[in-house]
Every structure is written in C-alpha cells, then in structure tokens.
Length: 436
Image 1 (cartoon, rainbow, N blue to C red):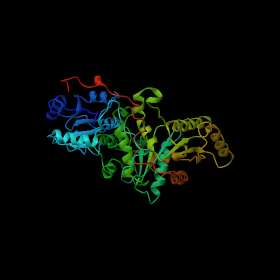
Image 2 (cartoon, rainbow, N blue to C red):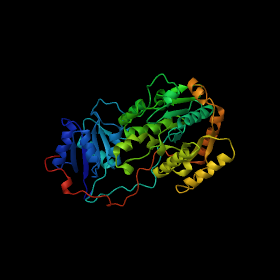
Image 3 (tube, rainbow, N blue to C red):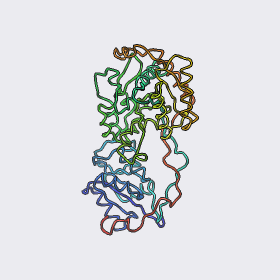
Image 4 (cartoon, helix red, strand yellow):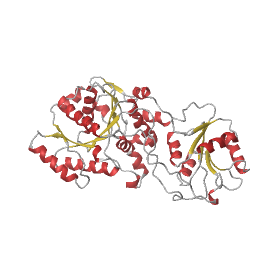
C-alpha cells in the first residue's frame, strides 16, 4: 500500500470500546488509518454527502437510525460498509447492503484484514474505481412489472384493475398477480371497498428499512381479491404520508414485489419531477413512488381520453416519461372511453402520432378501449370487470411484454470516471493530531 492510507469514518456511541480503540490506534500510527469520528446519524450523512472520499464506513450495530438508506448512502460514495456487532442485534446486515460484519471484540488484525479485503487506500489524488459497463445482476428470479398512469379523470385506476383481473384470469398468473397502489392519492382501497386499511404500502416499506422480507412475508401484506384472481396492496392512507417513506426502502420494496409475484401492476401518479428539475429534494422524495415504479417498469401504460384535453394530458404524460428516461418502446398509449371502431378512432390515432412526433417517433399505436355502460355499478357492487374491457388491455400488455426485455434485477452501479477527475484530499482534510 505505498503512498496511500485508509480514510475511515465511524459512527458509534462515544463510549464504545472499539470506537475508542480505533481512534487510539490511528493517532499512534499503529494502523495506516485516518479515522474520522461521528456521534450522530446526521453528522455521518453530512460527511458522506460532502463529496470527500472514504475507504470505509464503520457502523455500530446497536445504534438506532442505522437502516437501508444509511447503508446505501455510504455505499454510493464507494466506501465499504463494515458493521461492528454489538452481540445483541439480530438484523441480517448483509441483506441490507453491508460489506461485512465485524465482531464486537474488535482487534487491529480484524480491522486491517477487512480494510485490505474491501477498502481502498486513498492516494494523494483519488484512485477511483472505474466500474465495468455492466455490473452482474443479482441471482434469483424476478417477475414483470407494469406501471399504469394517466392524467386526472382518465381512468387509470380502473384500467389498472381491468388489467390485473385479465392477468389473474390467465392460469399462468392466477394468484400470482399483484395490483399495487403507489399513487399519492390512493383510491384502490375505496374502489375495492376494502374494510381494512392496514397492512399496506407503509408497513411494507417500513419492513424494508431494516430488513429484507421474503416473498411469503410480502404476500401477507396484500389482500386477496378472489373474484378477480389477483392480490391487492393498499396504498397510502393520506397523501402526506409520503414523508415517512425512505427512498432506498421504497426502491427495495418495488424490487421485491417482483420477486414475490409473477406480474405486478402498479397504479401510479404521472408526476416524475425530481431535484434536477426543481432544485428540491423534497419534491423528488414526494414523487419517489412514481419515479421508482417508472424506472423499474418493464412497461408503462399511459391512459388518456378522446378530446382536446384528454389527448393533451396523454401527450404530456408521454413526454414526461421520455424525459425521465423511459424507452418509448416500453410505453403503451391507451385511449380510454374511445368511440366505436371507425373514422373517429383513426383520426385520434393520427392526431396523437402528429402531436408526439417532436418527442419520439418510436411510440406504438394507441390501444382504444370502449366506453362501458354501468361500469360504475359494477365497481359499486365489487363485481368483475366486463370482458370487453379486460381482454383488450390484457392482450396488448402481454404482447408488449413479449417484445421488450425484462429489466435487470439491479441497475449498473455507476458510470465510468477517469481516475483523478473527481477530486483529491489534502492534509487539511485529515483530522488534527489527537482528535482522531
């Protein structure tokens, strides 16, 4: 390790023996480590977000507030995440993203072995790892995810229900189809006349903050809708409840839904703005459910209605999805409550193609769904959706899924960067003598 040292940041109770020992070893130069102490989660988050490079992050397993989001934040900086056991915690730290778990009685040899194995010494100029073009996907099986969205009044929730029923009627997917309500103003509980409001999305996301529920535990949070052949995951009880959902826990939840079901139909908002567009982290977190679903979806079904306002809303949703990064080949436009086959539908198809041309020329032709009389009565009675509605949308979605490749279980870890192009650390970054 010529010319380099490990820069390690630690979070623990100030009375922790291992915390004090590492500081003493680092100050006495007994180990080639520059040790930065943190005594609160907020302080650690600030250091990790500062842009400075760290070789590793040491976390005390007994502290509250250490969850998937904090581990992912540390991992995103390129640091190894080493959890020091307190001898009591039973969490599966590796499933939360930790690199390794160290014993409670920590010795210098244990620490240096893990740092040599997982950490990276920092030279005077950062030697950043250049990831390959694609990280290997995690092992395991994953189902397909279809997101359904549209402007207000377009009927996206109703279409999502019709699609879930159509998939549930298929013997391949019966009882292996989930309808998940990820909208801020969640209506599926009302549309299914659900007597219970828990468990639901909030409880499932919370379970992913500090754990990794298996498929059986995930299915327990969903309600069976036997007459339609699918399961239902209830959404937020109030729109403001988005504030308790942690972003990385949301991402883990959406990914694991596809591990528990063969097909997941998501009813989501069309709002995708984030910090880059608005300068607001709060807005990005408010839209986290929709952004996560759109980013993970194998197919996004966009719902509009005939008429000037309906087509305008449909065009805006498609443009936002493309700007967000969704491949147009993964977007299926649907015109709901369309007229009878004939001239009117042909005119709508031509008009939509002309309007969307400045955005993309790769969009498939829209699917037209007919107006169904007494649909409100069927919803009121909890009856099955009419076949004239379920069959066309189900056939179109299954055909589209055949055309597109499944999403990988994990996205690439990062984009290649030139060594030395990010920054450097200098003596002023290191803790003063005696403060480590």
